[in-house]
Each structure stands twice: as C-alpha cells, then as structure tokens.
Image (cartoon, rainbow, N blue to C red; front, side, top):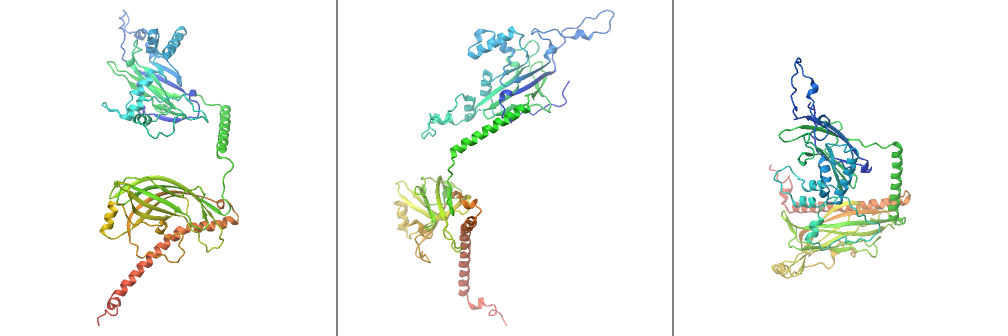
Length: 559
C-alpha cells in the first residue's frame, strides 16, 4: 500500500526550550511499505482440492529468531542520549578483544546484562549517542554542498577538526584569569586556532537497520532517521522536523532488491503538571530577583546626580575618516573648547587627542584614510543667568589634519571646526577644512621637500576665538585654500534633573535647554541669511555697473 502524501521537507527545524533536555522523549515508528521477499515454496496440489489454503503462503521464520511479519513494523520511544544497541554492536562487543576504550568495555557489560535478561527490545531502530565513534566520523565527513567533487575550505576543515562539545571546565566567579584577555602579538598558529566559533554542542543520531530478513547487523544497511543537536543555550535542532500533521518520511533502499520504508517522528515528552509549572515559575521569579539584586549590588546605591540647574553632557565620539587631502600618511589632532561662561569639565578630563598615522586608500576620485579612533569627554553647564535674553553657547570641536613624510617631517593639511550637536543621540558630522596658503613656487617646493608650511598659532582662530572681545574679527589678507574633510561620529548623552522634576526649576531649565537646542538651528539660519545678503549685495553691485538704458525699461522704448 502506497502512502497518499509523503513529507518531502527533510530540512532541519530549530526549537528553544528552558526545560532540561533530559525530559525530551521521541517516538519513532518504522514500517516497510514494499517487500522484495518471494514466497519460500510453492505448496503441492492436494488431490480433490482445487483451492489452496492461504495459510500455506506464510513464510518461514528467519535465523534471527523473529518472523518476517514482525520485522515489517517497529516503534520505539527514545530519550535524550539513550543508548539502543544495534545488531552490529551486539555482535561486535560480545568479543572482548574488540573492546579498546573504557566506553567499549561499558557497552560490553550492558550487552551481557541484556543477554542475561529478556534481550534487546529493539530490532531495527537503534541510536548513536554523543560519545560514539559514529558521531565523530559523521561530523568530520560532513559536506557543505551537494557537489560530488567538493573541495573543503579552510573553515570547513577547521570546524571538522574541532569537536563542539560541552565544556567540562567551569569558570569560578571571582577567580583570577590564567590566560591573557588580549594577545598583542598573536602567532600565525594562534590566529588559525582561535578563528573558529566553538559553541558547546551535543549530538545524537536515531538510526535504522534496513537490511533484508536474516541480514541484520551490516553497516551498509544503516540509515539515519533523525539527527538531534542541543547546545548550552537550550537550542534544539531536529533534522528532519517532527512529523506532526505532515505525512511520513520515506526511505528507499538501493541494491538488487530495493525496498520502500516509511517512518514518523513525534515529540511525546510529558507535559508539566500545573503544580510543577507553578513551582517552576516561583523558582524563576526567585532566580530573577536574586539576579536583579546582584546587578544592583554591582551598580551601587550612590548614583551620581547633577546639582539643580545643571546639565551634564557626555560625548562618546569617533574620528571616522579623512578624505580629499593632497598627501598620504595622515593623522588628526583635535580638541574641544568649552565656552568661558557657565561651562566646566572635571580636572582629570582630557579634552584633546591625536589619532594614529593612517595610510590612505583610493575610493573613487578621493583618497580616504580610515582612523576609527574613539574618544570620550564630559562637560557640565550650570545655568545661572535667569534673563530670557541670555543665549548660552555650546562647546566647539576643533580639528587639525597633518601628513607625515618618509623623513618624519609633517605638513599641515587643513583646519576645521564644528559646533557639537545640542540634541542627544547619534550624529555624523563632516567637517570641511582649509589651510593657509603662501603664494609662489618656492613655498610649494618647501612644503614638498622639507615640510615647511604656514601654521596657525592659535587653532581657535579657525572660528571665533574665545579670547576675542571685539565686535568684528577681520581676516583680511589671509590667503586660504580649501582642502579635504574629516568625518566624526558622535553619541551625545545629556543628564539633568530638569528631565524628571516638575517644579518651576524644570520650566526654567527647559527654557535654557530649548535655547541650547535652538542655538545650532539659529547658527544654521544665520548662515543662510548671511549668504542671501551677500548674493543680494552682488546683484545690486552688478545692477549698478550696467548702463542706465539697459536698467530702465522706459529708456529702451522706441517711439
């Protein structure tokens, strides 16, 4: 009888369980669909009878002690890492000379106990546990593709040589690490051995011996019915998936007499009782409470808060890259300038830094140097002026890009500045730079050969220096050249009691924060208006330089 619907999806399924894996139970049902056995004999015709009794067609018992009709179907309930011996293993371990390892001797003792009792309950269905040789060979010979001539890659070879097993060593809390966390000078062998993910894993195979009658116990007739893998995180991988409402899986043997088998895999793990679930929930709640107390003890109760009317600014930044510069081997010198009024920083805080020297690589038409240099700083703003007209200033980030030649001489590639974002969150800023320019061929030759170039004595001159007290800052006569740009990635955090207080202090501080947030917007709007005024002034000057008859429409009219 052929099945109406077979399950052709033999891919693996992944489950996650918080329960111990030892509670897992699987029911495997195996049944033969077609048989290649022929009738053992033809009954002789009895005189006086035209019909043959169907009972005479029953085949003879086999040498294994089981009748063929009993071998047509088998069902077994298997637990996690439960060992069911095959006929091949029974024949092998009965010979004491074949036992080489302690596990072999243990299997021999178990088989002898089974022989003294009622014998094996299973005939065709058996298992290979995590400690068996079959598991090692199966993982070592596993292919990544379906190609017949597959060449294993380096990663495949490394993963085949590394047995992913549970770790017997447990780290002691509070103990001293015996190995270094960072290896500054790793050897080639260390890199090859460490570049492999070694997740603790246990494997189990549910097998079937599909040999014909009287030929059980041959390796060539063994077939994998199901593969189970469980890691230390409670992730269970089943291949193929549980049958459920799907049709059974099929196996077609090869050889002179092919046969068709079907089998199903069902999860028959016992469900927890309501009392057990309630007890488990209490245990989990108690465990979570203890873990929360442990984390609280690590953080401590003395959480540092800001003083009333103050705003604390934390910036975790990164000098990402620099691009568009003339020479190679770039490095960036940067610092943060705090406004002189109402801003301060801790005494130990370092507000400047220098990146490593980085070679450039071609990216389109530009040469880009990737630094990925992290930095962090902290600053505080104390609101003292209650007048609405007082507009607070915001810190400014200055940067200086330099290049280094073969003789360790440096040259200035550009200066730039940008106002730090006034809103918390992640920001990516691209700072355009310029450098002072000295006219003449001699200056460029000096810059190329000996590294001499014009420099700014005060880097804050890139913008408006904090020490400047006048109304207008004149840069007349300063020749500059636009160079490249520097990319910064900033993560800004702000801390203030005004974010959680509902008193009048919150309203006053909110107005200051709103003005702080509008400071950068006002700066950008001011730049747009200034550019518009310059363009309007140039249009008026061009209009005044034109002849009067072209400007006045009435003068150009012909009567």
